[in-house]
Image 1 (tube, one colour):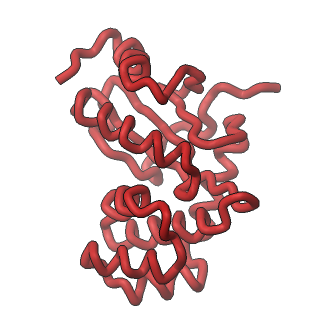
Image 2 (cartoon, rainbow, N blue to C red):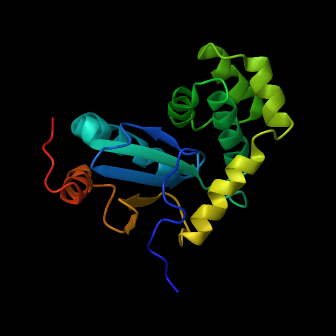
Length: 182
């Protein structure tokens, strides 16, 4: 069966940008080492800027560890930064430095972001946040995700072209009944 519905729906444990009552919720299952996810990152950022408070963005980890060995530690580092209240800062920094995702690189990013870098490094090496990463991954499997990035708009899988910002933002606007663009 080809699943096209987000399972489970967005909840309080998800990392979200934008208001909970936004008319459109965009969920991305992504892999920090995936070049396609790296290419999707600026498109999502553009959508967030253009749609403002009309869009809530949720990121869920889907590290494809067999082909991207640094994706899981990078996801753990984002979670470790989240434990320090800086998930989104680390999320963006990881995508901006996607070519350097070793643990030492992640600790250096944490230092740049003025996080407790030593703590982040210890937590990544001890896999403190691995359960959260794997929980996201399993939710992706239940939702029918088989590659990255995979997007869901208001709980339904989006199979359109995310590479075309006009089409992608148009799909988001349509899901919100024709939202205006800033």
